[in-house]
Length: 335
Length: 221
Image (cartoon, rainbow over all chains, first blue to last red):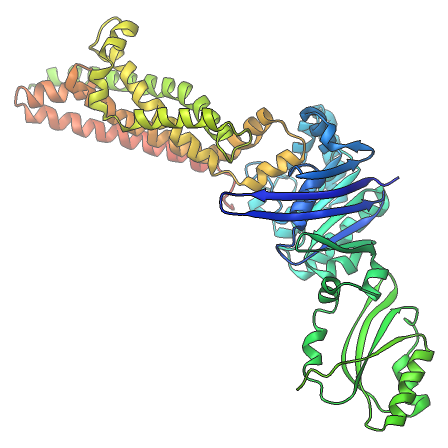
């Protein structure tokens, strides 16, 4: 059974001047142990969606079921109990500025009603997990962004939660620090089996660590599924826009006959283009390539400019199809 | 006035002024603090919106804030008699001082609490904190520096009010300034009280700001 289940979730914000449908009929199911990415452009409704998962935002209609409990049926105090099992980390870390690192980590445990000696012992364990032992008596203003987010992660882990919700947790960090934080999250997921839900607008975050992805576009769930499936064969326009964000620009520059080949994982270790040139003696020009390594397999696409000769063109396409690649003509946008 | 008469007079004046100011500030905080917390919690954007209650409290605070202190001082004389037994002297002045200062203090505290980063409050909610926990473990500790600065400013304002009360029978330095300096044309006495008031204000300000700075953890060392 799914650990998190969202059934026909809608959220409508009503203000005096207008009504905004932030979420429209979203159904998702997230299994235990998943690292589930929820991606969308800014304003797509993904932050609202993650706040519905722990009921910081109450959905207008639809159900949120966590570990078999329907959140709409819980009393206030039961809901607070449940939130101790569903931790959250934020874009701007949200640390208590007047408490040091230890004090911040202690916060979640104080709320859970743990005793002082137990809290101190647990803080020591957590400081090792997030490698912040030498910083334990510093205040947030003395820490870098990456260190602050690690404090937030330690705080989130303190009460042994089943789920960690990450709301744009790496968006305020530089690329290198982002990778460190993502590696830490992945490690936590693998070692402790904690389910992680990641809200992001960065494709690279999903590529790095997510097992599943949902694409939210203007409040609607465009697509969801395992990352490999969605990345290799995005069906909806919203998904294509996110995954092939840069491709559209390149196509506009093209004048001659072009084909797009799509990598979907199987041909990762085969030098297809080199074979095409070597075995068929066809010269191709790589106009654009955007391939990535997802879970050890290659995904992405390449746009090739073919020679003018029609026979050679057909030969090239035939060869690539033989290799099991998806080949399609690229429409000429140049005129 | 000869100096040997001036010194005991001024000493008594300073003591009375300190007594009125500090006791009034204390009571103003006892009333103003809960009021401020209620204002923050019940506001439309608060953690527990109760629009009707909020609007009533908001209106009461505004009304008392807009009555000039000198007029309030006279208006509440019957109440002062009821509580303090008489309408003149230092102890009696505490009644109107508290009535004037409590709404002022409430606004000061309210604005300090509203400065707390909403993200931190959301974090506390997401960790399962109840509203009292958020108030005592997040709102007040995080607003600490701003609250101390506010208390410094409030104490200074109340010091000013206490001097004003001298015009209608309050005690302290204000009364000395009016009865000697204004009624008996002893300008030198008035000048001394002014100097003493300036010194008191400076002391409050320096002490308050030093505490605020020393306890603030947001600055890099």
